[in-house]
Structures are given as structure tokens and as C-alpha cells.
Image (cartoon, rainbow, N blue to C red; front, side):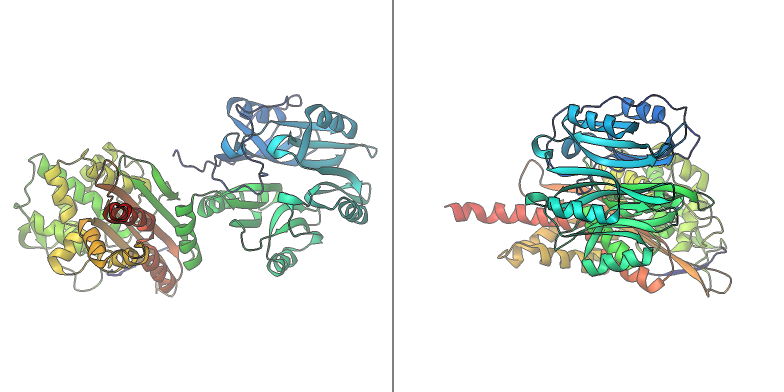
Length: 616
């Protein structure tokens, strides 16, 4: 891919839904909450902090009891974590929910500002087990609790214990006597003395795990313990002095992806969950960070494709990364930061391309008609508008889309008008897309789009919403990909000539003949637009890198009603600080969203060709 070096002075319904509300945005406190029961019985016995099945979830800060009751009362959710922000009326909380469906469906209850006898009574009456326990001195050494419990029956039944007003030595003695492991720890003070409220479960059978707990540790120490134990945090508790108490369990060889952060602002929390495709399993908030600070533990909340490709992006480069894969007229198959606006560099040229093809379709322009030919710049990527003859619209579009020619791009934008182009894009759903500078010039105001918007463009071309079959074929044939290779012997980023053949060879079923894999690829089709800005400061001593790609693929399937399936895909890397790392990561991941689909298509064609012979 040609690199753009530009002077520039210097962020479904998705399966993830996280909203952070700052204190004071919602109403007043109310009475302790009533129990909540799911629509169906539990379908899995996995505790919430162990469960990485993707689900809807949310987290709110500064919440009163009335706020919480109103929220779960109008949404089919349940509380999975509760942090007490204030213990004076109105008591406020940071609260985390999950959708109370599927693998997370459980009967549950929660209680606030109750004493030990009352809490014990509720546990017995509900035949329940504590999953969250927070304690505080309500005055005179009388301990009150905020607690969440689930039905301790069926798949969720466990041997378990809870204790409060305990010393470290007493907690240790209790888990040893019970052959148990801790799953919750919360420190609180009575006078000058620190005590601990804990929940533990039997460390046997399916619940058996290597585990550790630590008290009064620095962040650095906890990081060392996590690494040396090959463990992950399942509970994090912050002391008033800023040290932490933590419970961690052994990862062994099968640990879900997880992350932990301390001292984040609200915006950093939102950014971290979105970038990781994760959900919070444990969170606390406290004063600091210029307002409210958050420390929290997250577990993976993304499907397999999103997780795999997301890790390739996250492990390869810094900056913000996103990805998107959708079957045309079908489901979203992978998405990370797909609604986030980013600087797409030359990938945004597809918007100009579809507008021009729409004008051809409407009879307002002709591919053989003339447009002004501009003089290319003597250096750099920022085009001028000095007229130097004419050329056909077809040539200008092909040079813009196949070779990312910025001068041809300005010819197209000037011919049709940026406002007209963006107005049309927004008319069919690209509402987060804007062109704010001459493409190739880099700013100062960045151009903007999202992977959702680019996916909408390519899908609506592919399914015939925007273009007739003939114009659809022309649209894709003028782009990088298979058509460019057939015309010129190569394609812009090597996606068709290098990456796709490599994936086909890696994913072909054992024994699949080469002639069959060649036939498979011949039936594939691919069209895309990639782009890159290296955006520098005054001297390029520091810079950030923006790389993006989005497009359309057709993959053969030899079973079922369709002979092939169509997909739209895209990924981006924004604000990366190493051009080498971002470039290498882009090259290593740009085709990876199609791997599973190619694998499934190959398998279907292999079965179609050989299973009838084997069965005879």
C-alpha cells in the first residue's frame, strides 16, 4: 500500500452496551429492593466472574437505590457487582448489571443497609448464596451490609460460607477449615481496626482451582503476583490508603482474556471496555482523577472472531483499533469499536466512488464523459487543482480506487461537490461520515467515518439497494482486489494476491486437491479500499499513524441454497505512535476477518466434492 506522509498539526445493537452515569444525573433514594426472578430457570452453573459468554451489560456510577430499582425494573437485567460509594443517606453505588438471559439467567435478590441477622434471614428464606458482600460500620460497631445473592439451587448450587468482622488470621483459618477458596473480600474499619467481610466456596469438584489472596498490596506487587502465579483477578478491593486486597485464581492452560485497571477516569473506563470488547466483573469508584476514579476488573465479552482478530490488533500496536464483519443481508459476525468515528485516510474514497456511480446510474454523468484532469503535485500527497486537460470519469475513478491517486480524488470531489457527496451518503445511513479536508492533505480537521458506515455503503451496493446489477459490477471492478489483479497483475495491498491464497492454503481440509482450492479461489471475488496517513507535527519528530481498510468479499459455499455468500468487512488503526508496528500489524491482520468464512466455504466444497464418493 502506498504510504501517505502529510503535515498535520496537532476517538447493534452492538453486543456490548455500557453506559457510565456520573453522580447526580438520576433521582433520589428509595426503599430496599424487592427480589427479582428471571423469565426462565438458570441454564448454566458458571458464576458471573468466570463466565465469558458474550452478553449485554451496563455499569452506572452515583446510583441511589431508587435509580437501581427503576433500571432493573424496566430492563431484564440483574446486578452482578455493587460498590458502596457513600454510606450516609442517600446511599450511592457503582453498580454493574448483565442481561438476565441465557447463560446468565438466575433467580436473584439484593438488599441494602441490612444487619447480619436480617441478611442471614434473607439467605435462608431465599435458599440463596451471596455473590456480592459489602460491609460498613453503621455506628457503634453495628455492621450493615449491601449484598447480592443468587438462588443456590440446581446448576448454581455450591457449598459456601460467609464471614464478617474477621481478621486476616481468622479468614485464613476459615478457608483452610472449610477446604474453600475466597471469591469476595471487602475491608472496612471499626474505629481504628480493619476487619474483613468475605465469601468463600468449596474448592472441590468443578469449582476447584488454584487460588491466592493478598491484602494491602501495591499495584506493582499485584502485577508481579499475577505473573508469577499465572493467575487472573476475580475480586479487587481498595483500601483507604490506596493499597489493594485481591483474590486471584489460576489460569492454567485455559484462562479467558481479562484486564484490570486502576485510577481510571470515567472516559478511560469507557474507552478500555470498548477497545477490549470486555465487560466489568468488579468495579469500585472513589474520589480522585479530577472527579471520580475507577478501579476495575474486566473479562472478555466478545465472540470468537472478534476476540481472535482483536487480539492480533491489540498485541501488535498501540492506538485505537476497530474491526467489523457482516454477512450481506445477514448477521454481524464480528465487531469492535465499529461505531467509533476515526480518520479513514483514503478508505473514505469509496464514498466519492458510490456517489459518482449513482450519478452514472441516474444519467447525470457518464463513465465515458470527460472530467478536468489536474496537474499532480511535484511532491507530497496533497493535490492541487490546476487543470491540465481532461480525462474520462472511468479513468479518474479507476485511478482513485485502484491506485489511491489523490489528484484523481480531488477531480471527483470537485466535479460532483463534497456537500452533494456527503448529503447522499447520509441519505442512505452514513450519518457518522464527514469530509472536512481535501483528501490526501491530512487536515487540520480530520475526515471522519465509522466501520458501521463503511459497512452500510458496501452492503447496500452488494445487495442492490444503491446500484443496479450492471453498475454494481462496474463499482467493484474499478476497485483494488480481484479485478485489479486481473487487469494489472497485482492488487493494492496484496490482499488478493498474497493474503487470500495464504489463508486458503492454511485452511483447506487435509487431502483437498490443489485443483479444487484453485477452483475455489477462482469463484471468490474481492473489492476494497485501503488508506493510510502518517500525520506529523511541525518536524515529524513525533507523529501518529492512521490506517484503514474496508470492502466486500464473495466466498463460495457448496452446500445450502446459495452457491456463495457475500460479506462486508473493515478494520482500522488510529493514533498509533510507531509507523513500523502499525504497518506490520495492519499487514498481518487485514485479511484475518475472512479466515473463518473461507474455512467454512472450503469445507463445504470439499464435502460436496468427495463425501458422495466416500459414501459409495
